[in-house]
Image 1 (tube, one colour):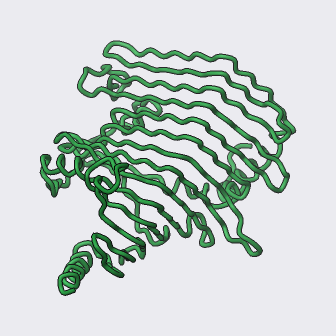
Image 2 (cartoon, rainbow, N blue to C red; image 1 turned 180 degrees about the vertical axis):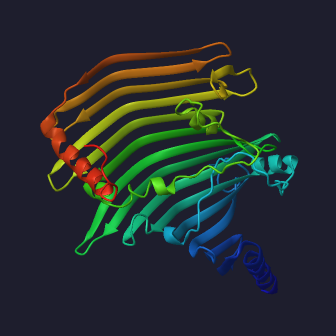
Length: 389
């Protein structure tokens, strides 16, 4: 009893001093902890864990490694209006000296080979997404995290069996659903240990179903999108000549990791207009995106007036796309689309292969959507004086 009390006392004091987190532990068991609560004092965010236990491959043969850290239901609650600011997730190296890793590469390699993390259910509630009456609820079931390291890189493999997400807005009479999302996700990240940079990312999505309702386009969520964009931080040692043109999208490609793979199967997106009882349904069998950049090879010199272009290859593949109206009439029918771009030291080549694309525009199906977008455009530009019609 004294040992448990001492461990809880030391952990609570360390979390409060180092992390500014208020820690509460309900009860202890044999290799098991119940009712763990974490409260972040700075942003008023809370994390609640029903149970946390340590399991072994000797007890459960389904575990990938020898030891597993298993969580029960995890509940996360946060408020966007209390978050002070956003930071770039894949920022380049800054002038701040980076600290050493808490584990050496050899110990990190042993840790990755022994341990894995499994979470039964995660419930995330994000308050005030668009307005003070909005709520974003995310439920994740059957998630697992595996780590792998060879001393030079760190691979993080995350598997999410089911993700259900809804954006709700509370009205005067009843709650209104703005958007819904359901999918299965596999995510793999490769990090460089010495450079602390994201090297590669692989995303796999299955059974993707999304519904965007009319209230989403009338809410302030889309209007606040540009305000959340990250502003570039100017470096005092670098001077830019704004008169020299740059290729659109080139800066974005350079910010991506060196390798990106995205594969989505069974995509279904529905645009719903409840007031007019109309909807548009877009289905896509396969979306495959590949991006690879080689920084070690010689770039394409003087591609633009003020920049070189690294050797890279980009490929996009779409198969069996279909856009239907509420009366099941075909508006767009796409068999396959394959586009590729390749950059070498001496040239740039691009190709587009389109197979059986039929577009049948029906104005009576789009007139309501065009009128809604026109009203939104007029509403957003009402405070700005119009220069031309």
